[in-house]
Image (cartoon, rainbow, N blue to C red; front, side, top):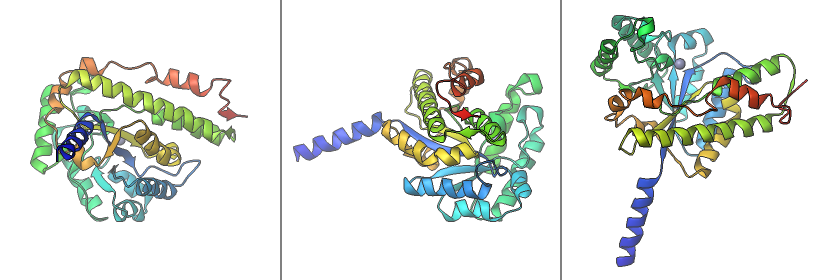
Amino acid sequence: MKNFYLICMSFICLNTNAVNIAITFDDFPMPNGALFTVKERAQKYVDAFTQHNAKAAFFCVGQHCKNRKDDSLVKLLLTNGQFVGNHSMSHPRLSASTLADFEKEIISNEELLSTFGKVQKWFLYPYLDYGDNAEIGGSQEKLMGALDVLTKLGYKEAYSTIKNFDWQINKRMQEALKKQKNVDFDKLKKLYLDFLKGWIQHYIDLYKTVTNKEIVHTINFQDNDLNAFCMADILEMVKQAGWNIVSPEIAFSDLSWRLEVQNNSELLANKCDSLNCDYIDKELFDFNRSIFLD
Ligand SMILES: [Zn+2]
């Protein structure tokens, strides 16, 4: 009995110390890329998450769904057990919009997405603009007003703690493919995974200094070819690093620490060197790496 107790205690301790990470996708469904069609990308995500017995939340933009004209895209995610959340109808910047338009954007997108199946009442702010960017018309009042709108509509905020510059790496990959360059995909994947691991560790450490709680981290991936190509290996890397992949449901169930963090924006502005497009380009185009060849 004593041994059983000790085993249980060590298991509980292990779990409390582990870092939990949930995975979200942004802007689904984006246009076809140079490497994959949007449908192929969706299938690759589903395969990767099925293989790792994990679930992600795909934040869909209504206008993107209309532009793609393919109802099977969102349905493919839903029928394979993935979550679909709301990312507004037209992806506007909240700081530059009114609260009335903010509300309309959420409601109209919910109506559209509901035609594909069950949609979660989770909202991911476009551009992660929370409404407080004074330069384009935002204010603290708008930020608080938007939270009231979410509460009124029964929504939870789909926050993001780990910044990801996947879009920059994908942009360079798309440019190279369009110029018919040879891309060493294995080297590209290795570099991207190294970057990701560093960014995740950076934000785990940073949030430890900002909150006193064990929070669930979230990392947001753009719907793009790079992520479709790498997702199975990304999930493997996260596990190998000793981090747990948890359901977005667990992440969005506790938002009690969010306002405390938003008031610490100066601290969170602290970035590591590699969260920078020039730095990423320098590594991508390093002669010795030969990722993009003529
Ligand atoms: Zn977005």
